[in-house]
Amino acid sequence: MSQLKKGAILSYTTIFLTNGLGLLLTPFIIRKLGNSEYGLYTLVGSLIAYVSVLDFGLNNAIVRFVAKYRAQNNRNKEENFLATTMIIYSFISLVVLLVGIVFYLNIETFFKKLTSAELEKAKILFAILIFNLTITLPGGSFSAISSAYERFVFPRALTLVKYLIRAFLIVSILMLNADSLGLVILDTTLNIVFISINAYYVFKYLKVRIKLHEFNWYSIQDIFSYSIWIFVYAIASQFQWQSGQIVLGAISGTKMIAIYSVGVLLGSYYATFSSAISGLFIPKAVKMITNNNSEKELTDTMIMVGRLCMFVLFLIFGGFFLFGKNFIQLWVGSTYNDSWIIALIIMIGYTTPLIQIFGNSILEAKGKYSFKAILNLIFLFFGVLLGVFLTRFNTAVGMILGICISWVVSQIILNYYYVKVIKLDIKRFFISTFEKMIYIFPLIICVFYFLNFIEVTNWFILGIKIFLYAIVYSIVIYKFCLNKYELSLVKGLLKNLKK
Image (cartoon, rainbow, N blue to C red; front, side, top):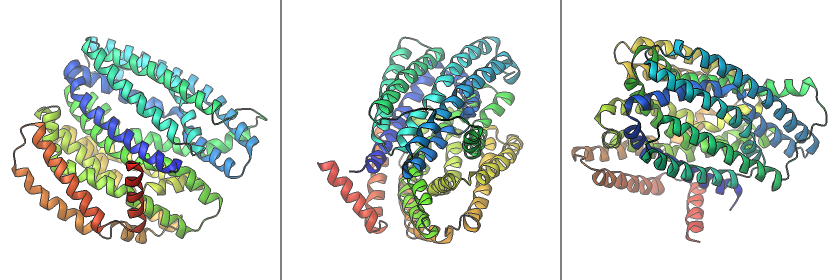
């Protein structure tokens, strides 16, 4: 089995396991920390998320340029490029530290609704997380190098191990009455350990060399002309989801932030099921662009990747639409009912862009990410303004609704750009991707909607409902929706699992 297929399997295994652990751990963490402390924990995390985008998209640049130099078989350029990026990362870590100090000294101006005790703890959490970032930002380059080398198995297996260890340690320290401070110390320690292991793999087994043959500003300009737009898009992404927590922190208390955070958490879990695939296909997109593959071949690959993503996403979206409210009530309690609506709105807005995820890889490979980055930044700014207006009617739900309306509009414009500039056949993409699902999926939802008349009072009943839905969905899709290529993938996967 190829590294790509193994990487895909490991990615989805990691996603299912980590998301499952996250779902199990979140109510446990909330119960142990309390709603207010959990709200504080996520609030500081959202602020840190803004600072974390200061990697300026260098990890994406590493995947793109290293894959390009490997396709050209140019070892010297690869070594020089990696050395240059490490110099840039050293500077970035210093900038992150300085920005962190500014935030730390002025944190009370951002969160005026917090009590004095909450502010003191927020400062400590923030200081530790800033230190964490100065290490993890350059440390992420080792995973990017592995991806560029199309070695997906080890880093993804390592990530799987990391989350298993993290879950066990979180339960252990919270049982010993640790608070949010203990959680951030734990995450910082684990990051240091696993970054070191990743670095050892890259140098020892991939034989990667980081050597500065020459230093010139043209190399840096070349890197940033590509990565700066990844950086702008990363800002837009943080602005998109985390800004809601910041706004709610200014106009409401920590309880409302916690409700919003749970909804965003579930929505972000949904996004990971597609992003895992996209990370595997960036090197492929770079090779296709380098080898001058036609727009038809790019569209074909976009359809192939999109259909695989669609089957997974529709399974999850349908299940959450049908049983998500029951799940949240059992999971964290009826206090968080609005979290279901928040997550559902995110999933609706996310679905089509996630199915088109290979288009993102094409933009990166062609170096045309600037349009998407600027487009998202502009529309998401208006989305937050719309969200602030809609909070008058429903605080948390209004916030996310405004953001998602803006997001959908920006994606419609992006599809026009795919057609006119990138020359992708988007009409054929939609027809080939959704040709049967547009009829079959609503039918499955309508049939299973009647299960909602059976009251859910415990996890066993909910589990039976979800199990029946997943089995029927899988059988129907297998029988009526898969093409020859997809059938061969499923049969090959089942054959390998038997072995």
